[in-house]
Length: 601
Image 1 (cartoon, rainbow, N blue to C red):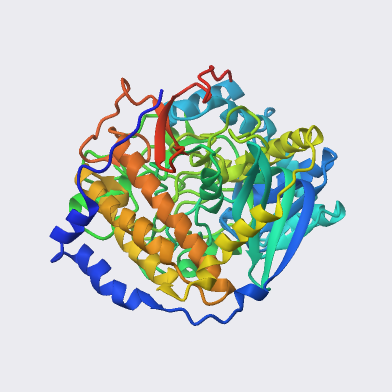
Image 2: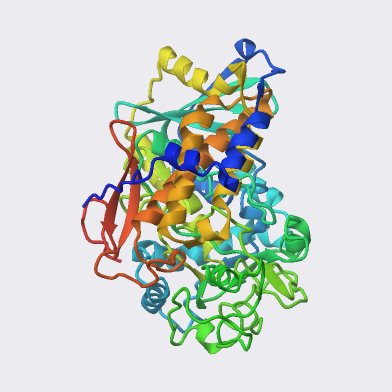
């Protein structure tokens, strides 16, 4: 069933015009004068060189999912190229992840069936049980491989990631930003981008592509995800892939002391080695803290939750009671503060640390006492709940030859809430391996694609357009404007129709007027321009799906629709580009694949 949401009950130009005395109009009006400037380019865009590659499987992304995708595709007999926007194992969210889930069938009290059932209960039905089961079934094998590669021996992951890549002689291309996916004859044909360090455009021809590009945010302060900007999701959307999960919100908070200092607040995560976690079903990273701050009017709240002994405002997001879970055993204790030896608690390997804050990936910064502020991960959805829509259990998208894994795949492995510490890193490893093997098998059956010179010239023109623009808006200024629109608590987290529509009016103005006139003076600013484009489109998706879902569930909270609506909203929202280029929406019922067939876990 397809539902198209109408968002133009209020004209954005009428809204901006009538709000001329407001802060929002002042932002766009006065700010536009400083945002627009001549483009004093440092590069002759007509003299950039071009490099071409051919491979069976192209893996985009150098995090945990990308590592296993490349290794398993190679092991399956495919020629593989691994390209990363940053450094292998050192960019995206991977360096921040310090707990990896492993299901030990010999020692866990819960069976896998019970694990899946409890995750579904915590996720209020939003999870895909096939992907939930996969992370339990395959996590131990992936952890053992990581141990063999030396992953648990250092807080830095580059060396451990490099070991299996070099052993297999997998070509690794780092610091190349991929901006376009190429589709020919209805199926994937390749990708294109540019180097951060050289004046060079890169073209890749491939029978299959695996997106391991992570999720994304609006470059918020105080959280280490600022190089994630929804690149893979938006590239795939632009060639017809369905994406999902944009209405959900990651609720990571930061320290109220020096809240913009990423390392100060989170250095304990970066400095410790990764460890393993066992089963412990939770309901974390929602918007409880944001609701408390909204209702009390304060900028920060104490780390406690309802029932922790701290004074909390009643109401707000619904939290299911998880009977028999680790979280229920620790009732009255903020998630992550329990005994280190309990199942599902902090990692059992690696450096212990002192302090009061939650461990693993959930909760606040390590060692944090006192107050927290929200918005540190603004714009990012819950792990594994955002990205390309899978059409089956093999991480395959609706575009033949295009796969995704990790946080680039909207697998709903844990649903629309964070249900298991360490499952994000484990899920990326598991899904990367599955996607790698599936893409290798697909590639064996397909001929090497042909991308015409005309097509390459068209794509190259789009890549370099900001460099060739004689004047325009600086991407940094447009990004700051977008942050001012999207990051406020009363827009992104505690939602209501009037504010969502007001924010959407501004975002559509950025999309229609500012995005086409982004300028870049060098290769670094060219990357920023493409990232800004991706964030604007993602913001539009987030606002429209938040308007469309007229209920509150998991990490999506509507102040004007505070209850769960089981009659109308037992469904995920998928987004796709219509034939006329417009953004279209459809519902996909929980427990089904996009074609309507039942998901059998």
